[in-house]
Image (cartoon, rainbow, N blue to C red; front, side, top):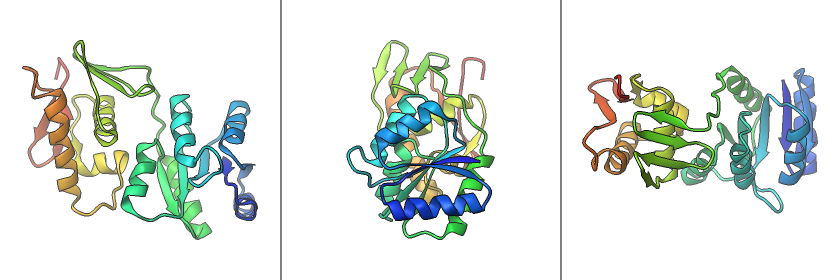
Length: 225
């Protein structure tokens, strides 16, 4: 694997690179978000290790910018904060996983291996299911000609559903792909956000798109589903 380390703490960046080299990986170091953009523009990476606390543009802004530029590389956030809301903010910004500082290199390597096994999803310009459209790049959603604004969590759930139309997705699948699977009361959390999503894109319309599959999960219904 070739990995980009975006970390302004020089000692940690060098130690991380050394550890990756010992594991047989190639690694480059960027100390700022701007340097990270330069590296990404000239090289192809299998993963990006991105610190949240960077000088200037912080890691969340870097993450959002990379996704807006349609960079699909898996991103592992490093954060000194362990609160649920901080982890959620990182995932909502487009990160694939997070690791809290201080961390063990064995866990870092394991998380990178897990990211490398995930199938890459194409960043389609616009997802369309029936009269429902979603633009992952601009984070805009339309039902027919009506544009709707969705909170980050509901946008990510809807995007995942729209990438798999007419397929039943369990709550665990939704949580693992969209959210933090360590949340307590997982079922209730997913159900609450599905209800809120329905109020926006389903309730005002005659044809309902989000179907509950009793005992299984949810699916997004297309015109042929």
